[in-house]
Image 1: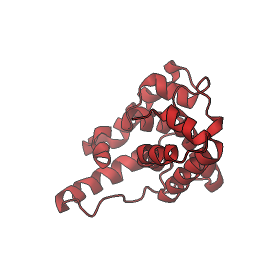
Image 2 (image 1 turned 90 degrees about the vertical axis):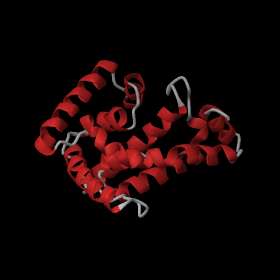
Image 3 (image 1 turned 135 degrees about the horizontal axis):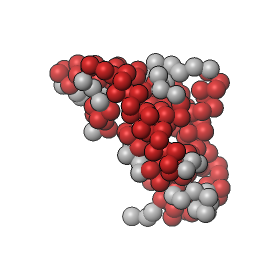
Image 4 (image 1 turned 180 degrees about the vertical axis):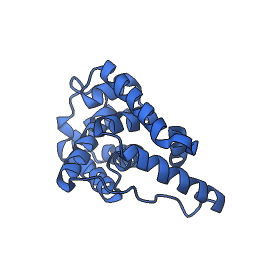
Length: 187
C-alpha cells in the first residue's frame, strides 16, 4: 500500500490513481472535520470538494519540509477552506443531521440527543478551541500533529484543548454527555 506522500508524488506526475486512493482515505475524515468546525453540512461539502480540487491542481505544492505529512497538508487545506467560508458567511450555521438510515430507532434517538446538545456546545466554543477539540478530541490527532497542522506550538495546542474540554464540560453540565459520545458517528 503506497504512502500518502507517494500518492501525492504520483498525482504530481499526472498519475491519477494517487488521487483516487487519497480521496478514499481522507474524504470522509475531511468532511467530518469541516462539519464539526463549521457546523454546516454545506460548508463541509464545499470545503471537502475544494480541498480535493486543490490537491488535483496543486499536488506539486506539497512540500514535506513544510508539512510533516500529507495528511497534515490535507487538513491544513480543509482548515483554510472552512475558515474562508466562515468569514464569508459571518456566522456558524447549525449542525446538520448526519444520521444513517441504517441506524436502529433507539440509536437514532440517543444520537439525536447527543449530537444536538454536544454539537451545539462545541459550536459555541471560540474557533481556536473548536479546531483543537475537533482535531485532538474527535479525530484523535496527537498534539504534535495538531500543532503542525495549526502552525502553533505544542503547548498552545495543549492549553487550548484543555480550555475547550473544560468549557465543553461546563456547557454540557448535567446532561451527562461527553465528547466521547459524539464519536458515535465515526463508527
